[in-house]
Image (cartoon, rainbow, N blue to C red; front, side):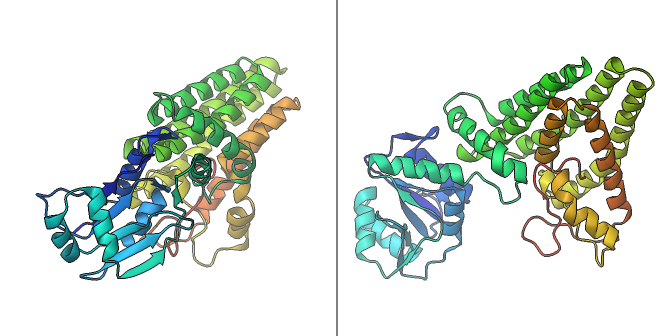
Length: 387
């Protein structure tokens, strides 16, 4: 039987924090972890009595879900600082309490009086009692948006900016899918500017699109609006915008350089886009096979006994193939007056992708998993060129 929850009200329950009230955030966090709201008519399971002033990321809900409470016991989960504990009440104990008390506050106090065990929560849990607590909780929630698989440019430049933008966007009516489409439109505008020969403007727009690309997922996580459709939309539109950007750059070079140089770069742009198709095919095949929608969860380094060439490709050049990294390098090339380097670097990258695929000796029945699994195929969400 699933765990069920009852929110314990607090004077700060209705105060908004990053787009949601404290109570809404607690409710969505628990439901994200598949802990369902308690209803008297439903089959009784173990019950989580959750003081809704305690703020944590989605990982806090997942931790609470995995903790088991022994039969006929009450377990208290204390946050790292001061504050009321989260109570896990076994269904046997809760049945007796519910018969006597229907008010959540009285129910909580009665369960606390029957406490049998206690422990500290591992995940960050911030009780928002005072004004300064909200600043701490806000910082913790925004910090949880960082991803361990972020590339170097994303960690140092893109993510800090996108998180700042997301902290503002959560207060607007914009949905994550709207942000995904907006990001795509900016990328299309960047490709158009490249095609006109406005290389610096186009490259800067594409870099901004790369930064904004993180906001849809961040807003989705902050407001618990993640969806399979949104993940696929983000992945597919990214994979359309990058080739269009390269083709726009190639066409812009064809229009601005003297023949035959411009024609050669345009031909290289077309060739590199064609060469990138096998990488997209393999990536989407593995995504579909694993039921994932995040292209960043696909890796190219799980082949057994890799050759030195393959190890060189997958271990040493992989950081350069992350989307955040190469778009930033493309912008620098354009600003320095060498837009033709964009085509050269992308063409080289696609050739290496083909080399990676050709040297893949993984068994045909290999089980491709996700981050953290043995033999998993993992890369960051931004690794579109490396597929």
